[in-house]
Image 1 (cartoon, rainbow, N blue to C red):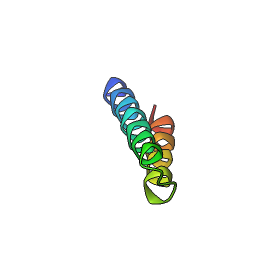
Image 2 (cartoon, rainbow, N blue to C red; image 1 turned 60 degrees about the horizontal axis):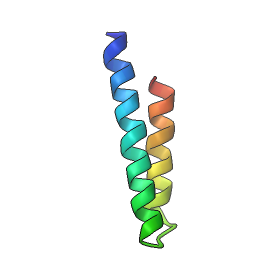
Image 3 (cartoon, one colour; image 1 turned 90 degrees about the vertical axis):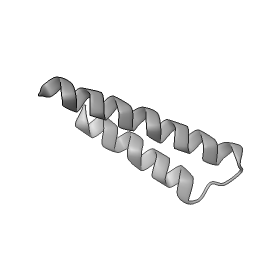
Image 4 (cartoon, one colour; image 1 turned 30 degrees about the vertical axis):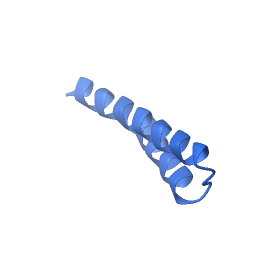
Length: 47
């Protein structure tokens, strides 16, 4: 059960960093950057 939470946390961290990088490449520092950071933080709290 713990391994599933760790895997979910790592997935959220990776997905959040991808969203944040895509937002930075498109020169959009608004919603996508905040959403990416929030997903990464959520992933850290889960793992």
